Image (cartoon, rainbow, N blue to C red):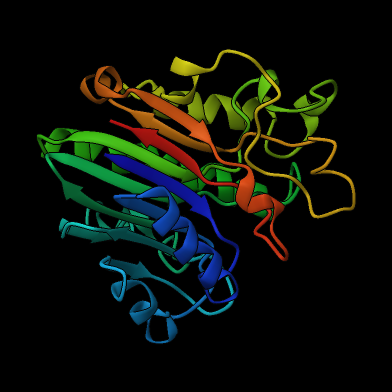
Length: 262
């Protein structure tokens, strides 16, 4: 079984690339981020035509998450609000960033974590609060349900220095600040482990490259797209890798897909 995560940076712009990649790679489940389209305008038929059930949670021009699966998913949850109380969630579901569903006793949680813009900004504070709510959300899921967890998506955080092409000085940079990393580590302390590092210890493996000329060709990237697993799933995983080939296409997403095999 292959489960993938990919920030596609507009599904309508990238639908042909995504469709062909799914066919070529025999993907069972894919979690998409930054779909950037309201649900009514999502190109659903484009993917149901090749056998995928589609679960979408989008908004106009920004954010948006979706899960495609060759098997129907159960118990779909949209946003934080279906798990947490309204006084905790407040207005954090106005941005469509969380969707989850169950397959084979595995709850897949697909996330698009806020970028944060710059340290000390309002968007940075929003990101940190969002991560606090995410921890409560995952804690509640672990207590309420019996499924194993696969948590994936664009985290907009490079957890370690080896996840950045040039880490020196990045401790004061968005996506690598100590505060952001500590917030993510607190979430992982719930019993989640980075499956990519089970198979690849070295640096120089990235999932996002800026669009600026030469950045991708020089491999000046960041690994900010992750798949985290609870213990039983971690032991069952037989591979996890980043496919950089879609990043080589004309007008690609700035992210590459990450794939976990069981």
